Image (cartoon, rainbow over all chains, first blue to last red; front, side, top):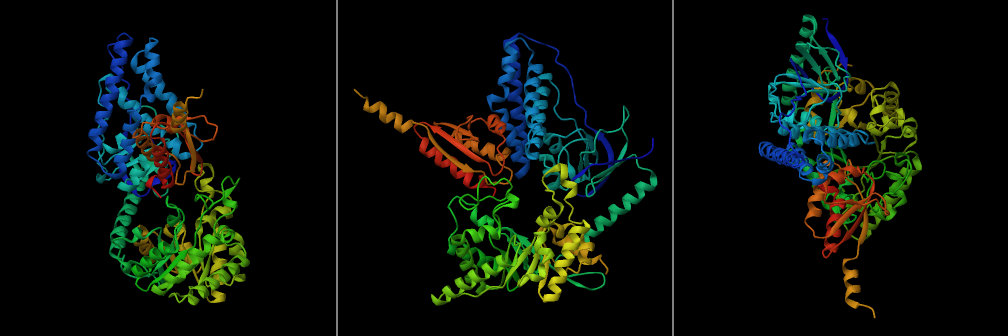
Length: 532
Length: 104
């Protein structure tokens, strides 16, 4: 048999090589069957036994993994789950069939959900179903899988995942599955490469013995030829060396191979994101999201609350520039009491600067807090979702007015420069027409508006490609506008952290990238590999 | 003659209703559902949720049933609460939703 190349979707990054372990569905059947009362008692015992097993498992894990299992415990502990099964048992069905039918109906409901997230929960219900069935059949729920294996199958349950020691270098390759599944989240946090959606696995009987998993590209090669394997092992070695070098280079400034200095900035959502971080890893903060301030239960944040948060972030940066984005509510970020409910297409509605200008009483408070914080460091303020110059002009006028009012009241303040996020194609195409103090490219929205494809809709996710020439052309055009006007241009979307795009992004003339703190080391290492 | 006590009882225990928008990232998913049902079970009151003011209503103490609602982010979650500690129950439910179930 020749080598088999399969392409799916990446669910957890990284490369792995290992023997194939095929997940099999143990379908042992029960020997003894009883009358309805005995069958109901057997099911009850199996459900309680499963809950005990899960509780024991929870004691051995932490954080996310424990929460996932607690969800299963909560579901198992709810009589509503087994209601249908007990009814069927009362009507003469045996316990295992009754339970399987009831859970399969529940699972079908999840699989039919509109939202990817709820569809992904089907794997948890399958896990629950099989654990109870194993209890009824008197079998061990979880087959032992060696931690250096490439685990393949249709889908994998959280319990199965948690029973494997992933520090030994294994990976997961699934025929179906979802990048939103609990297992995918766990795989990302444990560093186990994972590819989903490979489609039917093309063998009957004897499975392949070895697999190469590329969790970055979303591909799997079964039974590789020696040459294929050798190339893959070379890539793995290079990736490992790169990771070690990256960690060592985290504190150093980012330079391309030909010596061009690239500013690496941080994206943060709250001051907590900076806890324990050395400011020396970055050249400043390229994006502070302020939505979190507005999401609490205590209503909209007052001027003093906002001022205190902005000031702490500026003080952390110790003189490095900090770019704070004004409230970017709306779209996928509704905020009760601020955003408009029931818009037919919220991504094309009243969001970002449009909303702030429509709610000047909310916007003014934020502008005042920003002017007061500006005396504590190098503050820049950027406006999200700007489409036309008059939006920037109106915000500039409001900022001037609040700055003047604070001064008249004798309150310490400074007027921060006002820049725009370039995330609407119109703003990218006409960037030079804006009197912005700087441009910051929001590649997530710029990509989705350019390609007319949302990232979170699986069917069109492939179209949502920040590396598409159309998106790169808009970025290059913005960079050129910044060069002509003599103002800075940076990029703060997820594309900045995608090291496959680093070369293409720097080729547009960008010299400043902003990423989440966890991506800094990897990005600096990728920059070091780029030549003009 | 009108029974004043019965009337007051009806007033005290009569169903209270309120609604709140789900602001946490993926709606009423696994973890928030567990939190919601655990919180609901702490009250004697009958607590129900729905995606529309007119129902259909779902028992907020059952994680299985709450997950069946599949309430997405941005949906308005309606509450209907009846019982002696209904006020406190409703306040606790709304606080959970407003706080994004602690995952803002």
